[in-house]
Image (cartoon, rainbow, N blue to C red; front, side):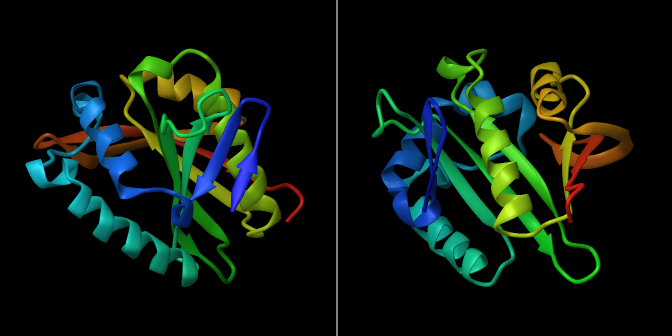
Length: 181
């Protein structure tokens, strides 16, 4: 499946090559270091991403998570970012978490805003979710601005929410609700 926006192709897992994801991760290793857990060398290999993409496909088939990969229309073979809807919970909750990341060379162009809006529309429409939550470190001001621009509202601060590089980091909790669900 591919979601299309004015400037992007946003592809689901089965349309992405593990080599492209490994190259993306290696290219952005230093840029993402302050915001991610510690990664070992295997994380940056094609073999790792072959296994991970297979597991991601299984999660999608079982309605547990959905992953999307961002490609610009002007260079449709170049992976420049990704989004994930994870922890999908059905029943009375109908909710998930949103995570996202964009190639350092493509920030500040509105690509992530465009991608989040497309994936949110898919989540609320096709998937029928009611709520999407994003958790972002307070110092990641750029990511907070993107989420807020996409209509995510701050709900609070989760103290020591996630361990990043050995330190339990606080995260701002934001959410967007599907008012039509």
